[in-house]
Amino acid sequence: MNRINPLYIGLSLLLIIVFVSYKLNLITDEYVKSKEEYRKTLSLAEELKSLKSVYDDKDRYKKSLRKILRHSSLKNSNIKEVKGTKTVKLSSDNMDKKAINFLMGKILNDTYQIKSMKITRLNDLNVSLEMELVW
Amino acid sequence: MILKIVKDHILVMKFKKNLKSIFLDPQLEYKTEDEKLNIILSPSLYWVKRISLPVKNTRDLLKLLPSIFEDILTDGVYSYYAYKLDDKFIVFAYNDKEIMNLLAEKGILLSNVANIYFSQTELFNEEMALKINDSEVLYKRDDILTLVPVDWIKEYKDLNLDLIKHTKHKVALHQFGHIVETKSLYSIGVILMVLILLLSSEYFITKYKQSEILDSKDEIFSKYHLKSTTFQNKALLKKYHSINKVQTNLRDYFSYILGFKLKDGEYIASMDIKNKKMVVKFNGLVDDRKTTLKSYLKSKNIPFNAKIFKDNIKIEVNL
Image 1 (tube, chains in turn red, purple):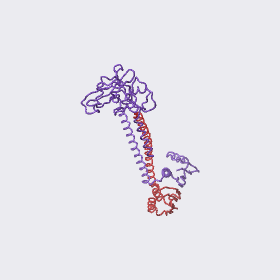
Image 2 (image 1 turned 180 degrees about the horizontal axis):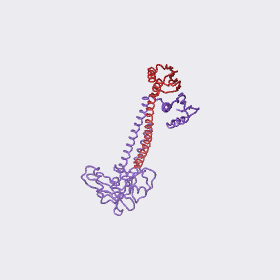
Image 3 (image 1 turned 90 degrees about the vertical axis):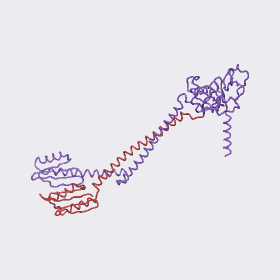
């Protein structure tokens, strides 16, 4: 009569079920967390990529600024350009109304990072300009 | 070492062969020690028949036994056993629970029961009737061993199981047969096993999906050229958000301020942006024009401070 008690086998099976359920619960929690983390990381990565492309594209800024400064509207403004590693400084002692409108229109309608700027009225038609852009 | 193992093995075999056998009968009393026993069931603990049926083997016969014993058995759960003797079958029906109860009543632990046999098979070859107790004798008639009163038999001898050689006809008691049928036990076992299998599969599938999602997360880091830690990336994102906020505000406020319609003699003397602060100086704004300007800026939700010097007003806006 040395047979294994079926109750012990049943209990063992139940214990295995409890153990596997517990492990399944743990891994499911981990999976849900990982999924959430994945979603957050993807969202962060896409947002970062989009902001980087807007504010951290030095080559595009360089090309675009060169094009603006060569424009005929700014020819008489005698804009000085001082390039640094992280910024570029633009200055003009005398700009007419048309030139300042053109330049500010181009700068403000693009995504240049304006670090500092000073526009001072000289008379009804002219202003002086100092501007520092980050690139 | 090897010799010792062989010696131990022989001892175990010897021990197995020399198990004590007892005749289990409700009328008898037992003095048992904590040792393994072979049990021989008294005819009062089972029903036996000698039958002839056109079946090929005992397995087929076992299926028919419940109906064969149907008329003589009382209510209860019974187990069945059969073997072939010459051209006939000897068939048995016994109540597991009844035998287990008797064992318990006689102080015999179920765990000490090595094998269970029927008197019919173990004492069949005895030529004389065997005296079981003061009132009963085990007597063979038409190849069936039965209990008869001692007065009916003239010649008999005492039962002695010391030198008995057991047959292969042993049975195992179904301890839970009276609660749940063996078939049900198997079904429950199978259901539990299937459940374990399903849960295990679910576990491995989830684990696989978990590792896949972790791999995908790593891929994001390389695809988007992210910094090695989330902390660094969050700090970088915070920095860009701050830049975006300042630059967006700068453009919005710039546009609103330039949108204020100036009258003759009014003009903007200077616009200054430095350290995330915008300062705009308006000149020539007389009387309520300064109030109009402030109302206009408020209507555009621009958070500003105003400093007034006669006809001039200086607007300071934090970006």
